[in-house]
Length: 267
DNA sequence: CCCTATGTTCCCAA
DNA sequence: CTTGGGAACATAGG
Image (cartoon, rainbow, N blue to C red; front, top):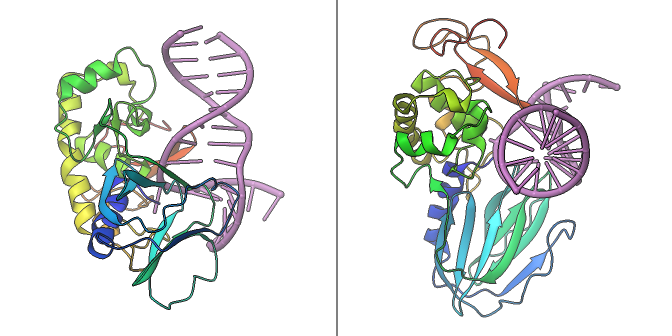
């Protein structure tokens, strides 16, 4: 579920409940992919950070809890005394006034406790950083992969996932199958300009609940109301009225307007 | 049984 | 060594 806006939503909400609180314990409820966590009892939460899709709970003493939610992970705040969710609870971090529970049906989420790292080389953040077309053009180089796959790759620009990539490509009027090396700086610029508004809106809406995404307090986001193409197969394009279509690229569903994005028959 | 699912990593072939 | 394509991870729901 979580792309950058969903992770940022959790970061903002955790920021309201955790800073200053003492960690009473961390309990791994599902050992399959989570383990070997250092003991951080009695550390206090000093900050809640985000590094693209990684959520970082900084602790006194210089360590941090780093969570990646992958496909279906989410965090749920349980007021003191509230029982665990019936299903898919994978990790529980307890505090004096309540607990944070990692819930994850598909069990892809990862958790790590480590020393806080110094800032190092990191990819551009699709929301925070000013991204220039010429930088994307340069990063794409001679790559033959469809531009959609280039945007999903977290190495050059990070934070986008399948939903927001479909939305951004539509708004910029770019054919998702176009080879990355064939885009002009102008086209990269046009696309980059959409990153911030699309993600900002989604953050303000506390994420996109097309399926089971819920925020820290169990509430749905509302950005699904603003989607132009994702999940709208068979419906009319809001801009031109043509029928929105869906075709896989690299195994992931790609929603697009064939007219606005210049996609000809099939693919 | 079939297909789909908001992410990432690994393997393999060219 | 690089690139790109596909499978894999594990589970639920239509």
